[in-house]
Image (cartoon, rainbow, N blue to C red; front, side):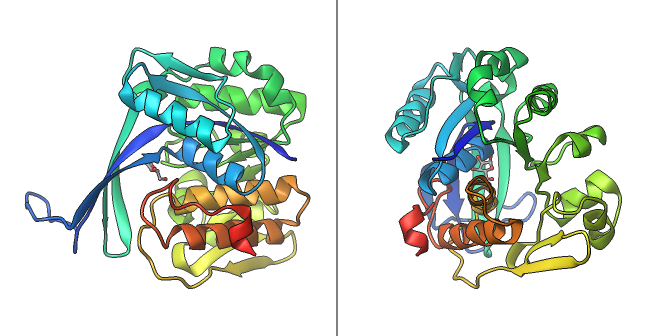
Length: 287
Ligand code: RIB
């Protein structure tokens, strides 16, 4: 079984649904409310686990009810929680509005701000044995940079999902093995247009494009892997499911194109249900 380590955020998502997004300063009635397990790191960890990898999640939760609830949930999912530290800051939360086939999210980082180089050092043995380490940008950037350096030193492949976007040194693009921005994030990172950016990072930059699908450059030409057409219920965590799925495929030795398709299949299924992690499919659901 492939070994994947995810170093990233853990949130509890407080999600409302409404017929439309409110305008600035406006109050409207919603149509539903739910509490779900979220956080880009945790979402990618659960996706990878359900799709067939052996997963360790490195991160921080608060010493509070939300933290306990998340730890219990990860254990039930079969994720190794040995490197999740309880800290004084409260567990991260995300306030999410789901509407108009899209979402709006505000994240309060809380405990996620405490994920440190020391947490990475504590998990070093697991990191070194991993087939891949997955990162996002909801934990301190200096920790992400340290992980990229450590993984490069030990020859461990990394997949960086640069979301939510924060400006980071250009050298990261060389340090990481795969990078999975959406079109806006790619532009912010490289100041280049889609095709130029992809051409600069062949077989490394995998650009997601919402319902259009995914693009990458194979060294000779631009490759478009179209998305599956599905009925949208909640897109929260769709990108995370894609990242987790693509990582699993790559670790299993699939070609980049095959791994992208695996990720896309999984995220298409996740979009059909409410919640990030609750909606994620198991490997058998993809057949
Ligand atoms: O990518 C979706 C996730 O972003 C949500 O689960 C929310 O917690 C935020 O981290």
